[in-house]
Image 1: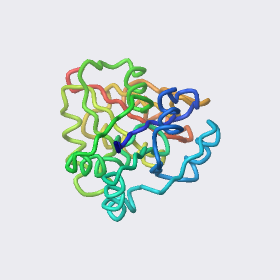
Image 2 (image 1 turned 45 degrees about the horizontal axis):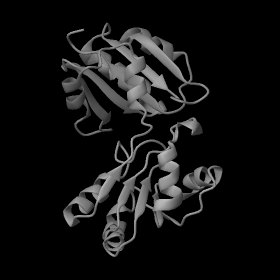
Image 3 (image 1 turned 180 degrees about the vertical axis):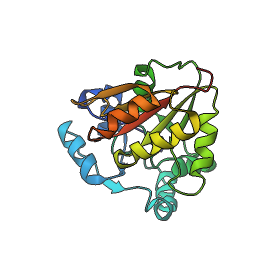
Length: 225
């Protein structure tokens, strides 16, 4: 019987992949849907996996969707992977998952790497309840969203790119105040993993004088800290 597997891939250290993920990719699927076939190809080669791949990313997922669903309905099983982390968490995956649910195609999501959980746990901020925002809007509605985040009574987790990090921290400080606690994590699970903690003003000062590289997760303390 056909099935769609959502398979997390390492966000840094290749040892973070699970034995189950390797088995699924190697033995259980007919096709691997990859955000970037070149990057996934390197991962597959490392683990001795030889399976056909096709590109499935934010720029072609609408065009590819019906064809992939038809192939699943015909009996093929597929794995969806992103460049790093868990499919559907700020990466392609939702449209395909929704289409499979609609068509009655089984979905199996494997547990595995994702950047925001270790960033949250290493932040030192309360994590029994939290708000995962993902990426902020770049333009329209951005400051409205930031105002909502600043008013949140629970910890908020954001993804950000290196070149927008300082701007985002400064915008958060302009609404939430310079003294709001924050933790910025980068390069999680990689050699140069770093967690910078403090108030918004302290962390802003750090990144004004430091070059920002890698994937970024911002964890902002609540308004009731």
